[in-house]
Length: 137
Image 1 (cartoon, helix red, strand yellow):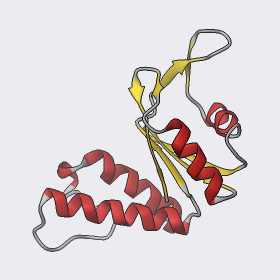
Image 2 (cartoon, helix red, strand yellow; image 1 turned 180 degrees about the vertical axis):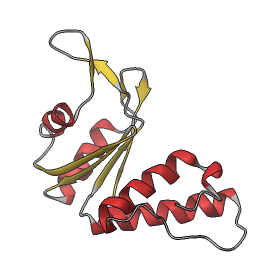
Image 3 (tube, one colour; image 1 turned 90 degrees about the horizontal axis):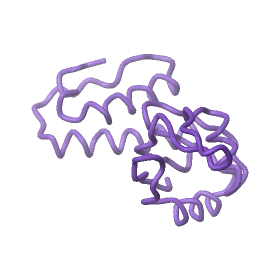
Image 4 (tube, one colour; image 1 turned 90 degrees about the vertical axis):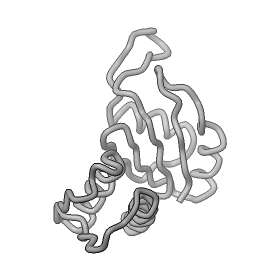
């Protein structure tokens, strides 16, 4: 990966790098050759992330997922895993695939409507100590 600009937005750079890796089976993002500002860099990465999500057929993203959250039945803090994310999101619609990476969950719902209604229900919801942010792609 070209780490020249990573310092501007390390979390987004890591997320996009991960998506790039699962999409193209290469661990490198494209290199940016010109001098760019933070806003330009962030905008370029967000657009790249969106395009990579579309290529991978993800139509929903959840940001700021904590590592642990309270389980409703046992009232114990449990690690958030692939299986409990899939189980939770399945309550909102049929989930085709999920990818979890550093507090971000990429989801492919069967329909755009399922992704949209999930967004309306859980965007800005508190999970553990974090406020989660969602986006429909």
